[in-house]
Image (cartoon, rainbow, N blue to C red):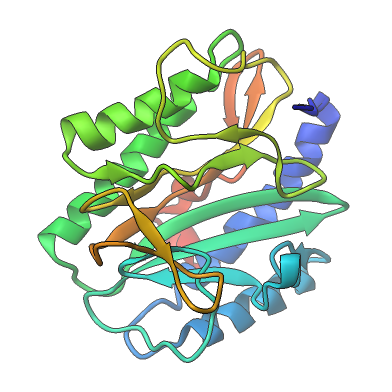
Length: 261
């Protein structure tokens, strides 16, 4: 395993990519409503990302055809944007990667489409909160297992949902996927030591039902195996001497007028 630590200057460059990503996420937040297709969201994202002098990190990555991943309901991740038309009551995971000046930022958020069921709302709340609990563990001297343990304990022990085992977060930098892998489960105090300069894409993926998943025939889309709802939230986080720094702070715009960006 070769973990590539970043200098403060490089972290600033990743934060600049993250700023464009957040603006993209806010743009899409304003477009998510019943009747909109995931292809329309993808086209809006690509147009905006390129208008900022950046590139969509996912477009063409290992052959992926979209600029974003758009995954509704029981689809966990890697949904290919297309003709799917959003319906009232859906939940939709939007995963975005932005490359700016060679540096990658990666983040995801699951949105409600109009009013959603109480269980869907609980799933979104629990999964997002587990991400914030994970952020708090991203400090020098902690271990990777502390991140996974924080997520798993909150999701499973406290709320009765299931953390997906076969999908994990990852290091990020000039490449979208770098070492180390960042599981959303684990034992506190175990695993790789967190050090200043590490940058991690931490991304809890949670099913209402059991943790198993299945891949669709398109070889990209991944669903909960039991068909229950799934949610996905992600930040790119730098481990710094001053504490965790979220480089993709989409949460800061939630619910405010900034969502009209």
